[in-house]
Length: 521
Image 1: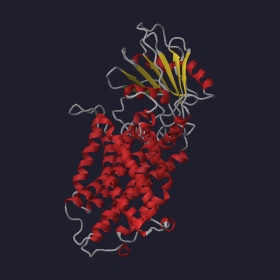
Image 2: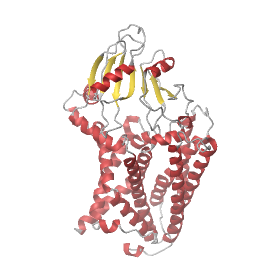
Image 3: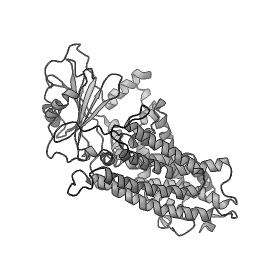
Image 4: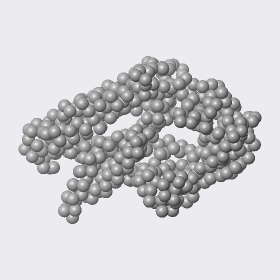
């Protein structure tokens, strides 16, 4: 059995070395995405609004956005407000162009000022599953490879650590750095083990048609045509040929369509309305059923004639896709359940800590075990990459938030919009953190100190540049206060961790004879 554990230890070590930094980035961005809508409101002060109580009416909104629809739009869409996103969201798509976006005040239906940011839902969330590398889906493939490595790490970790329950209750922060980080690695690994396994496996299932296309290719034609058939039968797709004649008269009542949808769906309500080919006589309206009250991210769809409001088609997922959509719901947690949302956030953080402490443990143990510390290009690059992949990523995240509060409205430079400048701030600061990490192990503590300073700075900037803390004005600010509170907690933890890392790495990197595990205590 000892030989088996030794082989699993080698697998565990190399999977962590190769994918550790990437896994931390995926887990970190996924954890932030649990509260991406709240972060959006922090980054978009104009959306810190109180929602309109009671059932919403869509016909007035359709009239309000009529002037915003481009003449040659292929489709336009309205997303209904929710408690987490109180503003109406209007988007329109012109052929070959980026979507047009407007947010509407729920009380006046007037367009809100351009937010000038992608926010968390437009940057952190896509980063989580695609790394913003869209060429040939390479980002999703990297995330998939890292997810498989995570499953290997979890299974190997179970085999390696025989006394998991004893290790769960063992944390000795006063011990030397390798020992204390290993304890924390074990505690967080055991605490979040079921969650980590389910969240990684469900993430792979979400993109099964990319990672395992053979699952459907044998049942459909080859090439793009077969893929389109699979998409239509699995996810739903209704099309109606163009009439070639201009649309006459106003759009049929969307509220009447929603009432009919409620009857079909047994009381369900739509979460968005989309009008296809709005300028053509054969225009039609798509309604998607909301899933905020259930785990499954259903793909129930209804299509209505745009002129008469007559129901044209209906789609519901089959048994297999229903399982896939349930696992998608488990992964994305888009349903309304605040205790579970906080639990997801906490367990996501345990995953981040587990990955980070695993990397720190391995690097610190190499430093203790080598007389001259980490020498050579390879080990130093591994150390710098690990530092930049953990503390450097957190610094870049905070720089993204700080840039959001520092850049003036309408800012642009070198042809980049304000939102793009925020993204550049993220990547430039991340690159700077990588360069700084070449200093060696001391960079751990120094960058942790920078995290603490930046987190406090973000809170100060929010208070100075917005009305979040104006006396007597609590409307729409609860989510923002929560973000600020989390930033202050982050600052406190980072300050403590920075001091511990600076002291631990300084002690652990002294010239020493090779040490066994027991000597780290």
